[in-house]
Amino acid sequence: MSTENGFPMHTFRCVCHSKLFFGNTNCVSCQRTVAMCPACRQVSAMEELEDGTWKCLRNGCGQRQRFCQNRVEHAACNWGVLFEEKDQTLCTNCRLNQMIPDLSVPGNLEKWQRLEAAKRRVLYIIEAIGLPIGMPDQEELLPLGFEFKADGAKPVSTGHAGGLIVINIKEADSVHREQTRVEFGEPQRTLVGHFRHELGHYYWDLLVKPHHLEAFREKFGNEESPTYTEALQAYYANGPKPNWPKQYVSAYASMHPWEDFAESFATYLDMVAIVTTADHFEQENQRFESYDFDELLNAYREIGIMANEFNREIGLLDLVPEVFTAPVIEKLRFVHTLTG
Ligand SMILES: [Zn+2]
Ligand SMILES: [Zn+2]
Ligand SMILES: [Zn+2]
Ligand SMILES: [Zn+2]
Figure (tube, rainbow, N blue to C red):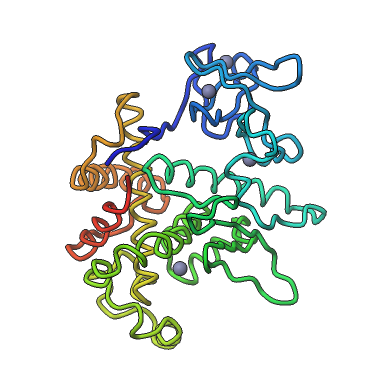
């Protein structure tokens, strides 16, 4: 596995040597303005130039940039836009939005800010592990898009179709999300979890269907029989397959091979995010490409056991609720082969 950007960083250093976090817009120690620099892909201290543009102060970078319009106007982003991209006002993440919530409705700005924070975090890891993202102005790749919508006359379902990910903004309301989580028995219903799952559907369309369909069917089953509609009806009538923990990473994964893939994909991203975070704090310059799949899985299991015990001690949910049976491991290994 190789990645152009290398190891996904989880914390960064300001020029004053204080730690900077992924969502920061200012250094809490020296008060400097900071941003995620699109060139060095680190949250860095920025210097304002006379013409109102900014320069990355990271050693060896110095990239000139403007700040994403969603940061300037709505505090919904903390990324920069390359100065060379003259006709762009939005960063590469915000450019993917096809619809944002109605900001004249009280509470929607805060929900949108939470959605963007989760989206940025997930896309950052996606890029670091070498998965392609179809930008709206490209033609070679299926363009990826996001719509953040509220229930209106018709209820909005969170889901993916043809590159477009729709998220119901009430998912950014923690009371609603917790109720739904308990109702559907989902141990990990979170905003980042939604993005990871729906992106799994996107990568099925983008990578699996055209290039890996045979290998997919060997591990996940034939997605054409039963059809998705038949599988959905059966799931809501009868619930998950009995014995699902033997074959599937979650109850919902047993619904249909597409959901199985999306759930496996989301779990794989959880695994990468958690293991690289742990290693980052141990050894700041570890590179993602040095992991093979078995090392990644073993590290995740070990961290999972420890973190679950911490969480149980104070009554929080398990960090790693999944059980990794042999068929589940083979599915995760399949996802691993798609990266880098
Ligand atoms: Zn500082
Ligand atoms: Zn930079
Ligand atoms: Zn942005
Ligand atoms: Zn799904």
